[in-house]
Length: 64
Image (cartoon, rainbow, N blue to C red):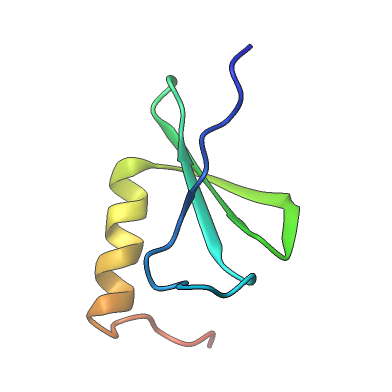
């Protein structure tokens, strides 16, 4: 089994506390924080795109 190819966020620079993203053949995407690499969130590319758009557009609603 090939090793996972994690990509570090371009906003991370030289920090050791970064977001990492990896794409998988089953069309899922996994996200983890470098400070806690054992904890991963799995999503799809379309859902990740929606999350990124919401963050960039500052349209995330706080918990009610």
